[in-house]
Length: 237
Image (cartoon, rainbow, N blue to C red; front, side, top):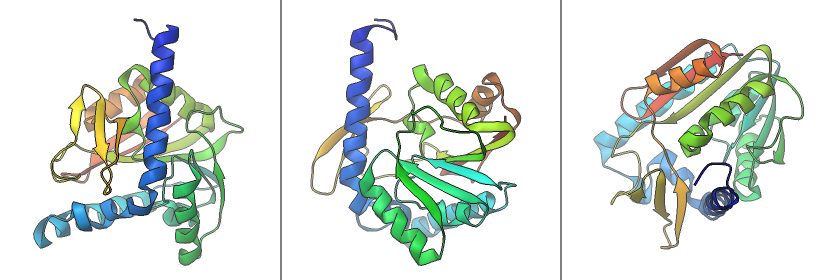
């Protein structure tokens, strides 16, 4: 079955819709993952290591030369948005309203200002911005569509504009235990209430991210890691 077949497109649309439904339903508990609460707690030492790397990722983002018109796609509950809002005029988008409600409250608490709206990460750009950021989105892009999304990211940017991302490395202490069931790029995720959803989850190495960005025509590509948990990438159009 080729990528262009109607059946393949329908299957893709079905997975995309289920992933969106998952993050709508997960919105009330999503920040438990960032803060290592409940099902995500691993004990004081492991949780301290996680917090240290999360802090390093936040400091890395704050140190980037992002400025001007900044777009954040697939923003979820807005964990990174307060940092981005200090760096320029932030437009904050997600495909679901439920996590955006939490992002709005996070920004309000932090004193940040942003345009906030429901927008699919795959939607065509409505302008060219100075900066683009995605947090934990690229790992939800299938290998068969990865180049397509990076081309879309480039289309969001003015020449010389910066694309930055933070994403997951495949550490077993990153998510819930027991680990979700997998079938290739698909992963079956369960919420705290037991409901299950099938989503795309692809872990890539920093080297794989860097090669893909270069192949998509980005320059000044730099992809590193915090050690165990997070990949950090930045490149210019």
